[in-house]
Image 1 (cartoon, one colour):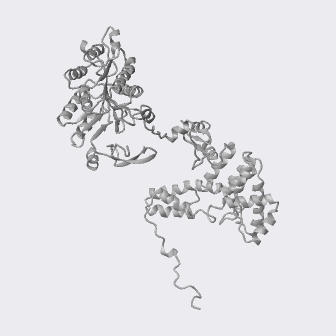
Image 2 (cartoon, rainbow, N blue to C red; image 1 turned 90 degrees about the horizontal axis):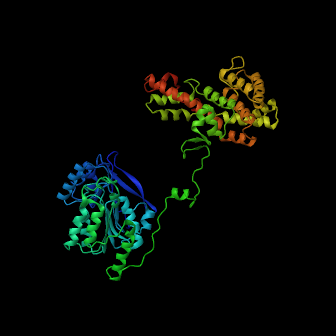
Length: 582
C-alpha cells in the first residue's frame, strides 16, 4: 500500500487528539475522536470498524457502530462476550447487511491490501509468511493463534495466502465458515481453499452440503483439531467456548470423516496438513489453474531503533549527555546510587546535592555544611530586593512560579550573587602569595570592590550571627581553613577604616566553601577551580533563597494582601533637574 488503510481511531476517554505511528520509516499522525459519530462524519469513506473494546463495552459500541451505514464489516476482538449479546449483535448485523468477524478473534488479513486486528503478528512475521503480497490460498480458521500457524504453513507449501479469516472460537461466531467460503468461491483469484475447524459445532456440515450441492467447486483442504478428545473418558472442554462436542456429530473425528467422504482433502493428522496443502497446490499448478508468478523483491522491515540498539545492530551519537542521574532502570539513580540507597543511608539534602552537583558522595561534614548554607541563605527579611519583588508580584495576583522568578531575577553582583566572585577573589589572592595589606592596596588602586566585605549595619562589635555560625563550623570540621584565615586578616585591616567593612555572610560562605572543597580530599585543585567558575556557589544561594521567596509568596496569599501600589510620599518627583536651565 502507498497509504495506510486505517483512517482514524476512537477513544472516548480523552478529548480529540492525534497519535503518532510509523508508516514504513516515516511517522504519521492518526486522528483520534471521542465518538464514532464524529469519526464517521469526518471520514465518510470508511467501511470497516475494528472494535478492540473489552467484553464490558463491546456490545454497546458495536451496536452504535452498526447504526452508521458506512460500515460494511465489523470485527470484534474481545473475548468473553456474553452469548446473548453476541446473538443480538449477529441478528442486527444480518438485518443491516453488515459482515461480522468475531468475537474472540485476532481478525483477518488480505495480503497486499489490509489486515484486521493482530492477524499475522509482528512485521517480521508478516514478511516471513509473505503476507505483503497475495497468493492463491484462501483460508478460514476458528482459532486466531492457529491462523498465524496457517500463514506460515501456507507460505512454505504454496505461493502464499490470498485471504485469511479467524472467525473466533465462541459458540456463536458472528460469521460462519460457509459465509466466507462462498465469497472465496465467487472470487476468481482464490484458487484453493483451506479450512481449520475444531471440535464442537456443526458449521462444517453446512460447508459439506454446499460442496455436495455443487455451490462450492474449488478444492478444499480441511482439518478439524481436537481428535485427541477420544482419548478421554469424559467430555473435554478445550480452550474456546465452542470447542466442546455436544454429540457424536460434533466430534473432530466425525467431522473429518464426513469432509473426507464429501471430497475434501483431509490429511490423516494435523502434522500431515502441510504435505496435503503442498500436494493439492502442485496439482493445481500442473493443471494450469494456478499460474506461479516470479517472486518480487522482499520488502525491508524497518526495525525499531530501540530494539535494534538492544541487539547491538545500530548506534548513533546522542544529542544530550547526562552523568548525574539515570531513570532507565527499575529504580531512579543519582550518580549511580539507587534512590532507595539515598534514603537508606540518610544522605539528606546535602548528600543528594553532592551527588547531583558534584557527582560524588562528600563526607558527612561537607554535606552538613551545604545544608547550613541553604539554611542561612533561606531568607533575610521582606525588605531585600528579591523578597520585595516576590511580594509585589504575589500581590499582583501572579502564580507562584512567576513570583519566584521575579525574586530570583534580582540576584546579581549587588544582591546575593557575589559568592562566586568572592570565592575566586580571596582564593586567587591567597594562591598568589600576596599579603592581606597588599591585596587591599591593589584592589584600591584598580578601583575594585572586595566582594564579600561590607555590611550595612553589622560590625565586629555587632557580628552577624550567620557569619559566626558558618565560621565556627568551618574551623571545627574542616581539615584546614587557609582561605578563611586570609579573609579574616583582610577583615582586620578593612574594619580599621570603617567598622562595618566586615567579612559578610556571602564572603564567609564563599571562603569556607573553597576551604571545604580543597581540604575534603574529593576534588583536585583543577576541579575546585572549575566549581568556582561554574557558579555553583551562586547556585547554592539561589537554591536557599528560593525557600524564602516561596515563603513570602505563600505568606502574602495567607494574609490576603491586595495589589501593591507604592506610596507617593516615598517618591521624589523631579520636574526640573538642577542646573538644566543654566
